[in-house]
Image: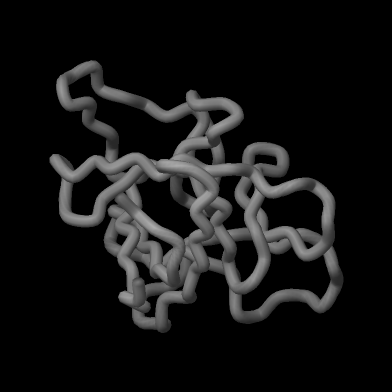
Length: 144
């Protein structure tokens, strides 16, 4: 199972890195989480395990939340973090996952510009998801 640690996240679509833009305004407003151009260093994420498969996912050092069906990093205390279920889809590739809202399990991450929306699932066993709903989440700190 996945544990608390430092990770990088890329989209299954063309391996675009997922994270915050390097050029953000200096306000305390929530910052969008987006797909970034290839060739830049993938931003680090801190995944903080809350329970078995459920995490607070921090972009930079700030937790993320679903605000208006888009993914944002939150710099203040409001809104509270969305808890995310990171569900393995290893039949679709190594380190490949869907990221689902634990409050509302029909909603999950999708590209572009990370949206939080109902996921399209092909009714198969195991279920299959289109690439824009899949993310490769790779641990980079390897400490116990």
